[in-house]
Image 1 (cartoon, protein in one colour):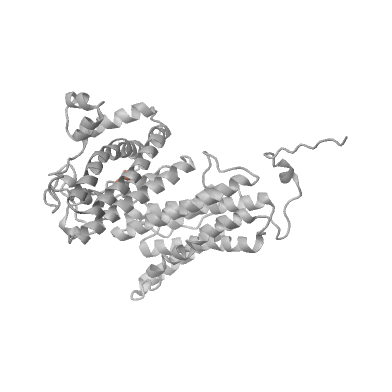
Image 2 (cartoon, rainbow, N blue to C red; image 1 turned 90 degrees about the horizontal axis):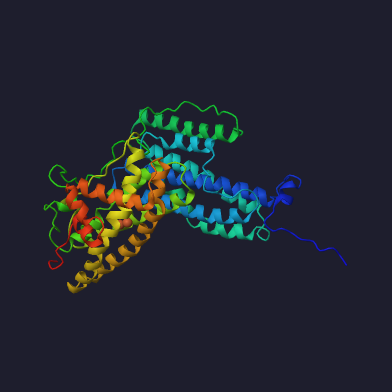
Length: 447
Ligand SMILES: [Fe+2]
Ligand SMILES: [Fe+2]
């Protein structure tokens, strides 16, 4: 009887031991390596775009940048799935961008202004898509069919990503010779950085060219740039923008829509978290990117609806975004993230749910549906909070259990709102009462 051969399908060592890849034929392990390079490039592009949200004083542009960042993370999801099917190491929870690539991208992200940033983004996206194009020539659509399907998905965003920066760079400084020259040296610098990266070999120190920008405008600036069409509330008078009676929707059901519209300030804080916190598991960044993009959508649906109702954003007073400094980041990040997902979002369910019926009663089905979608998204975010809230404290070496994190941030939230310890103790463990203290109620009867 012939001897039975057993093949362990999870053991790829026979492939890795085979003679190394030659010519234009890619072995599965080589494909995995190249896909991994694209994965980290996508990640750095998502960090780059997220990092610049607070640097631009334009509400629409902030939303566009978050959208781009989110799309890059969706590419990462596709790539990771295929990488895990191929031989070689997976993208595990400890994985992070190779240091040379990260440094190159960081240098290009530290641009002097929006035009320079757009040029840098365009440059790296172009490099990325050149790699994807090269795949089409080298990969075999039969042997590597599943990779082709992933690339097909990634291809959908090619035009949008490649063309995003064009309006900024096309006529860059046509009226200003001096700035044009500086811009030209920036382009030379970007190119130089990339060439140095490409020539580098792992383990060896890279000799980077001097950075030409003295004061970069981004990423994550110390003071977030504000859109002048969204004037700030006077925080010496009110705890939060929603308490300012100046806003025309104040003391009416429509204030729900204003609250949605104002979520760009949560977006900005999330972008600092996304860019600032290093070396969390990849899934954390995927979740935070989705969360941030959802808040952009909430702000967009709110602003659109207010405009449909005939209001101007200038008529309202808006909550400023606060930026953590490098010194306060460790403490601010877990606190902000946990209080957003464990206090603000779960508490907002109460008024959102009530507003669904109230809007219908006042004959406004669109606003009612907005609240329904809003709740669907917020449920997802509360889940993210349960998954990452306590882990973030732990990551910042401030160990707090999941149970602890919820209690700590609830206490903190009420203390910030000026309640006494007695009052806090009374409501801390009863959900609806706690929220009654933590947020504002709406006047559901008045439209
Ligand atoms: Fe939201
Ligand atoms: Fe949310």
